[in-house]
Amino acid sequence: MISRVLIPLLLCFLGILSEGSSDASHSPVMGILAQPTAKGDHLYIAASYVKWLEAGGARSIAIQDDLTDDVELDELFQQIHGLFIPGGATDEMSYAIQYLLNKAVESNQEGHYFPVWGTCMGFEYLVRFIGGDDILQAGYQAENKSLPLEGVVRTSFLYSDDDIYQTVISRNTTLNNHHLGLHPATYWSSPSLQSVWEITSINHDETGRPFVSTLEPISDLPFYGVQYHPEKNAFEYATYPHTTLPYEAIDHSPEGVAFSTALARVAVHLARTTLERNDRHAYTDPDRFPYVYTYPQQVGTAFEQIYIIPKSGQSEVTRKSYLRNGDMSHIPKRSYYHIQ
Ligand SMILES: *[C@@H]1O[C@H](CO)[C@@H](O)[C@H](O)[C@H]1NC(C)=O
Ligand SMILES: *[C@@H]1O[C@H](CO)[C@@H](O)[C@H](O)[C@H]1NC(C)=O
Image 1 (tube, helix red, strand yellow):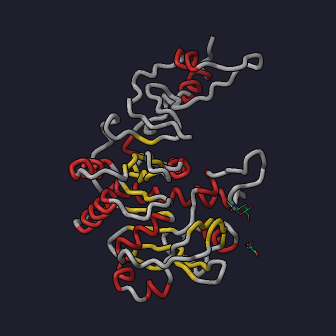
Image 2 (cartoon, rainbow, N blue to C red; image 1 turned 45 degrees about the vertical axis):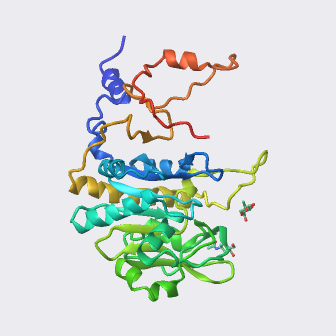
Image 3 (tube, rainbow, N blue to C red; image 1 turned 180 degrees about the vertical axis):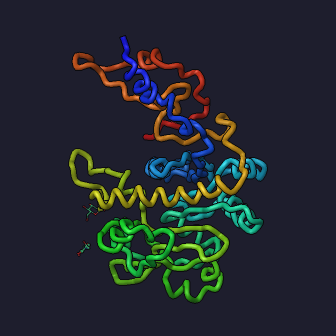
């Protein structure tokens, strides 16, 4: 028999009492660019970006880089509270991303707040979008380099938190992985860049050449860009095959991980602002614009994902036995969850 004390505890445990947490309006939705793989046969999003946004409290919808239909792009734009452009290696800015960036500009100019976040390639896209396609310099030696930020503007939005500030100025925490860069002198010779952003940190590559590592808005365009990878500290742990040697020089210290997730909350806060200020559509059509989850999109149960662990004597647990435990029939057909 279940005691009186246990019943509320159980209900809480199952999420039934957690009023509000089921209210989707408390969770902003980011549109995240899915770009072509190296072979070009499909599109991808590195899961660490999705996890990073989840750590900040946002869910994500994929934006297919090859979309060309304005009606569909308009519809997508209505479903998101912010645009996230991740790192990557897609030189050409697609029609889709340029269209959405123009929509973002238009929206902000009309007084409807709409933030854009760019990480690494995303940073470079933002700079090119405002400053022109040839504005970046090539040949930087800043690959697989974790650095402390220099010249950090403490009063800026991204670095005003004491813990974040202390970590970024004092530790090799921000991982860089780029050949292109924005030279500070280029910024100072570009009226268009200066009218949109201030530089809130810089860095030097291995040869001592400076590059801008953070741009924050001073205009009515809430566009934020970081040249480094804040998602990696908390969410990338790759090693070389059959070793424990880290594949990339990522700071996984408590400070590094805390920095990563704290900055995720700062980034997602921007999209929450859209949620509070605008009357954007709630997310409505999972078959049309499914969330990109880092786990199977389970509905109608308290747990969106569970791990099925074989009993000690069992060699494996079949998918069939997993399905028996839950009704998966409501999972949207186009649910993206398999991340290789
Ligand atoms: C950062 O790493 C460099 C080597 O790449 C090292 O010389 C430097 O002392 C480190 N800085 C800090 C603050 O740990
Ligand atoms: C990245 O740097 C670390 C530390 O310097 C090194 O061990 C690792 O092999 C490098 N990884 C790559 C892919 O170059």
